[in-house]
Length: 298
Image (cartoon, rainbow, N blue to C red; front, side, top):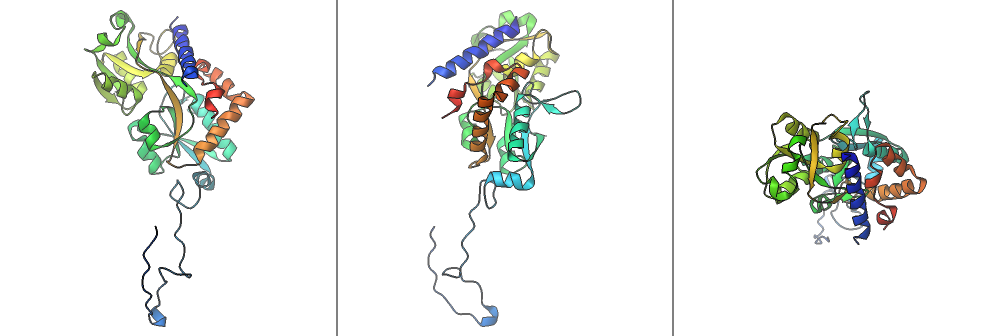
């Protein structure tokens, strides 16, 4: 029953989104002895300064990724977007789409688990090439990264023990709870905005563990994760979700100025056209959250 309720929630979110409408100063030339003559800083013989690309080298970010032969994707353990199967391979909606995108670039994909709170620093230091992990397109994210178009709807929702759910059905009832939240996440931002007590943890999966063990009273996580990991038939059958705190959208982040964001937007449109993105969404049961192609195409 809970799965059907959350599916309706995601459908509602999708419907809502459909309605939302140097110059340099000249220096005097001075002759130097021929044996010690230095290159001129100006004039016809001077070399033009190199222009850096988004990756910090000559050329584009795409050229940088192609030259090294790998697209390094920053992720966390976040079912159903990025998680490991029984053999230890990274799978999930985001993981599968990242593999397909890398293939169109002619490179291999490499997944690296990151500290979510440091995702922008990981990009800028070139430890990773993109953040592709159910990332909410907040103003902070969009100012720090070159982001793709949105591709999924989501919400931040409250997780509590199932036997206490009746006590926590609105935001006023949450004021005395201590929340576990992923550091640097949209969930942490929502809890902070409400003035609620919270303990930051490394990942959303850790936040669930805090509630299950009784270390925290509640957690705030993504609705897509809740659908996969909370309730009857999951590893957290004794937990459930109650209050929806917001609605939001997912996107992929690259280094500021990267041409890979535009390339990914084109890939998304092609994936809508050939049906592959819808098929992938159905594999992981998130089709209700997939944003309509008319909203993706600008």
